[in-house]
Image 1 (cartoon, rainbow, N blue to C red):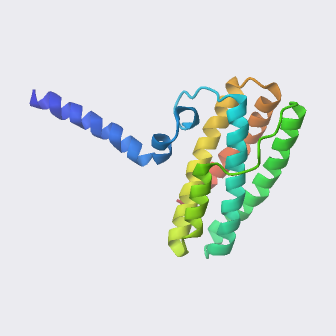
Image 2: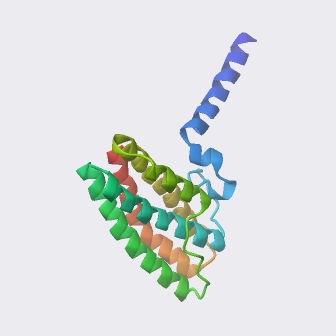
Image 3: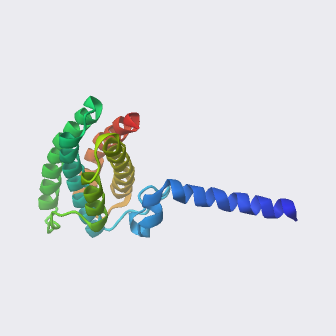
Length: 180
């Protein structure tokens, strides 16, 4: 009996640890849990809205990084984010136009606005750590969402866009992982 209770508690601890290590998954609604293994493709509307918010966050948080960081590596990554995600935004707008869809408002969602506001309050190594974590977590979510939409989304043009952007997003994830 003691062994069974211990095993049960150990299993619960692993589940709790997994949620503690992944606050984005614990806090987000199921449709946005991009890191979930077999994520169902988001609706086109959700894909559009989430793509705009994530892309804008990458650009805005990276502009803040360029003014706050003293790290050459972080500065280099932030420059890449501004450049690549500005280009991605242009490609996204073209894909939305080609798909004859109404583009979503270009604004941050509450989650990304809170992250950006928090970053603006930090300095030094605390800033660098928070920026790198936000970039890593954001790219994990975005890669998973783009993979799911590319495989099962319901708009052919946006699926092509998702497939086109995946190599760059994966490269960003690889690069930010090396900054951790």
